[in-house]
Image 1 (cartoon, rainbow, N blue to C red):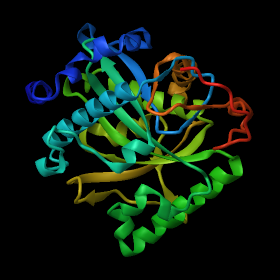
Image 2: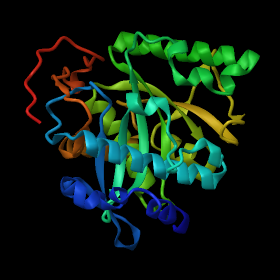
Image 3: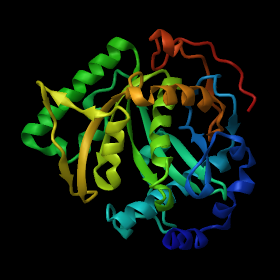
Length: 310
């Protein structure tokens, strides 16, 4: 991947030293991929995020958080630029695709054996009291269509109502990127399934994602349990997004209902993900979500704060 390597070489030297900087990453979940590549999963948490004590490897590491966030934004920027989804002037001088939503979101990263971020997905969690106008999807091209925009609003409002009844959060998932050499491995599939696992460990959710048809991204998400949003018995259409210069679909998903074919894998990942490193920029608030299996998880339940010594 010459272009990405060149951009990394031009950056501050510490971006090439993630393996040395974060030795704890490489004891995390690993998966053998094509050509004997291995990757590790790691989470970076939003500021002041409530975190379950079930996550056993919390790291209060502000510099590490910033380095991983920057490395992720570089991967995303390089891949979106190569795909024509963004232009060079949308990147920072050091090649980062920086969005304000990044600081408010969880990020699930795949880090390769050399210490480079090779896959990422963003998980933006909202209280289920949120409204349509609080969500990023309000800025989508489909939302600006006169008729379909109204149908989108009504569909999302219905989903928010269901989330409130079930006492789970509502989320928007996005920021997908996978390095080219991993696109034909299991990496993209594993990252998507791990998103279901993360959701379960954060109390469960209903959610949406704006997925591109490029690189079969929307097809992969449908394969594992995503489906089209509907209103009045009809699916919302795919649409062309001029901002990202590609055809997009808005898909819904439910963390408790992955496709049956992958249910066992999600169950396994839901257990294993509790052992991966969680890198925090602020000292986390530790509390216990009600058990997901009982279906009583809430966005911010009553809790007793526990001391965090990380």
